[in-house]
Length: 343
Image 1 (cartoon, rainbow, N blue to C red):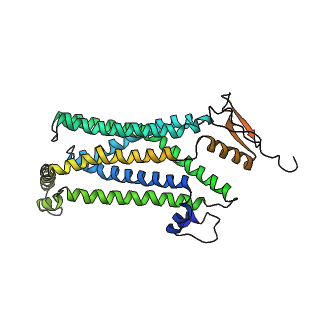
Image 2: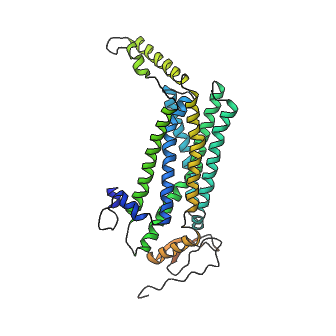
Image 3: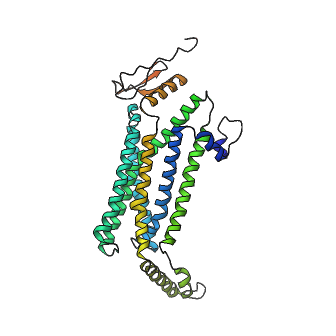
């Protein structure tokens, strides 16, 4: 916060509360804050609930669970990296910046629906207590959801960064050049970090209320092996004891815990995602307003490289007298910027 706020041109250093009060009147930034708030909650619940879903629903523990966490990470990479490349190529066409907002909302709405379906169907079709082949099917479905979720969420990162930059650009223009980007970025990041930590804490509280009572298997089995006196057989006995203890610990948990872990994925995550979609669609810097911002930035910078969005597909260099308009708005008349002095 201190480093980011020092980048602004304000005469005094703002606290987080002062920064929030100073920027809250900006409606566009307000929607960004809500987007970051609900996205932080989503991330906190998803990351916290992962191990509990693997342990108490898919019944993994020990080395198998650790290996599965690595596999989940690989699925995330396989889903996100190719899609990020596709989105970056999509945005090389200037007119597509006007379409990104709707594309993000559509993708995240699809992800919310897919999340409900992919977690509800195994529960309905396979039953509550999974075993044998049922566990294998549920595991494959979970991996598919991990990869598909990253595919559908990848465009959101591009929109989030772009929207924050548009807010800053508009603010600089409206404040006659005063720079407050550090305050905007710091407040938005603080909102997301706070909500992520709060959501994770509430998750842990919920596990306890749902009846979670895990065993301390290391403590229970440590007496079986003394590393200073026992031979290799003692170590093997301790490992077998830990394995049996962990399996028993999973089996003796109440069914309410499994339902709570599933409900976080089936209900809470989709609800948070729809809230993100709502504030994404409500973000007001779009269409003609975004086109005007591009024109003003072109006036300020003298030239920008954009696509001639009305009737050409090849990029060109436009100067301050060019009007940049969203696709489908050929009839908009934008007054040309005045010629610079000495032109």
